[in-house]
Image 1: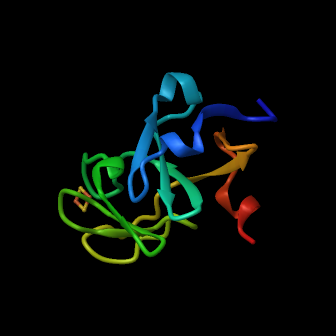
Image 2: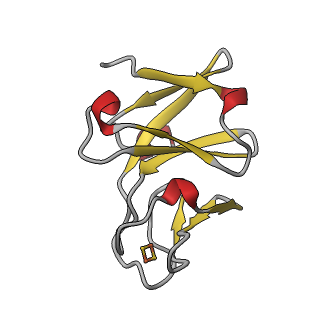
Length: 115
Ligand code: FES
């Protein structure tokens, strides 16, 4: 697990969107949403911390994702809740692009990749 899970080719992650890695694959408590914002990828627990909504269905822009249900915004880089009604940070995971492939390190905090 130390090397992570290869989840997709970078080009297969929709720009301004996300794909979902099932919790049974990721070995996590929640499904993991892998987002692409420009040339960068980010990973957060998929379920909004406010209620039951998939953040992967949200709107990605400027390093943030907006929840599709009540429009709370989260930092893709840290998972921090940036606007109401969410007040709890979304759990983030380290994700890397290696040779054009996206690798998820479930449970490794995203802070480990913050540059
Ligand atoms: S479910 Fe995400 S803001 Fe309410």
